[in-house]
Structure formats: C-alpha cells, structure tokens
Amino acid sequence: KPILTQLFASLLLLLASQASGQILSTNFVVTSPATPSPYSIGTKFVIELRVTNFTSIESMQFPITFNKDAMRFDSLTNPVFSNWTVANYSSYPTQGRIGVSWQADLGADPSGATLANNTAIFKLHFTGIGNGTTTVNISGTPGSAPPIPVEIARQGSGPLSPNCRNLIGPP
Image (cartoon, helix red, strand yellow):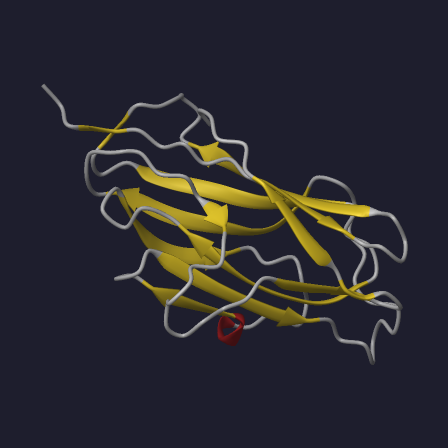
C-alpha cells in the first residue's frame, strides 16, 4: 500500500487599495502533476503563483508557507520579471517558509509593473516527503525569524492593505 500525501494548495489573497479601489488577487495553482491528489511520497509538484489586477506594482514582499513535514521546497523558476535574481527569494526549510521580495525597475518602467490577468509570476517546485496535507499560502508567521511582513505597493497609492482570504481545496 503506497504512502500518500494529499496536497491542498490554493490561496486567494485579496489586497484592497483604498486609493484606486482595484483589488489585486493571487492564487496558487498546481500545474503538475495533472492528476488530482492524493499523491505518493516522492511526487514532484509544480505550483504557479498567478495574479489578477497586477497593475502599477512597484514592490512586493511576502512569505509563502507550507507544511514542511508533507513536502520539501526544491526551487523557484520562471520568474516573469526581467530584473528578478536569486536574491529575490530565500528558503527557510526548517520553518516551511519561502521569503519573496521584489522591486520593479522604475528606471525602465516608471509606472511600475503591470501584468495580464492570470499571469504566473513564478513557479514553485516541491517534492512530497511525508503523509499529510498542506495549504500553500501567503501568510506572515508571528515569531518566525527573520520576520517577513506581507507588503505590496502600487505606484501612486503606496502600500496596499492586506485583506487575506484563503480558499483551501483540492488542486
């Protein structure tokens, strides 16, 4: 009987901008494997972080959390931003956390970055390592070191006030 890992990776993070009234939303989408969970231990997962209403964004910083006993973070690939480097993310495997920090190249694009709806801003690669379930989500973990606050800034509006809502379900 195979050992199974169930992966529940879905998030909707709503960030409301009081200045423009436009809602920036993100969601995690499992793009590989195509078959629904449960998954066997050793299964490789590709999870895209997709955005909607990503307009005039000048910077973003946030932690991505997951159950470190159910899966291992392997890599981050296919960033959509031309000025993205490996310095834009950090892995904290013992905490089940990935820190993301990025700033638009305002010299090249003074109005900030704008992306088409449903654009994947990067792909996260994981391996299932144990039984259990996990929610992959954007969430500040109080007391974690180093602290990584959720901060997203829109050009002309300043910081957006996070209004988080998780949607958890099968991929």
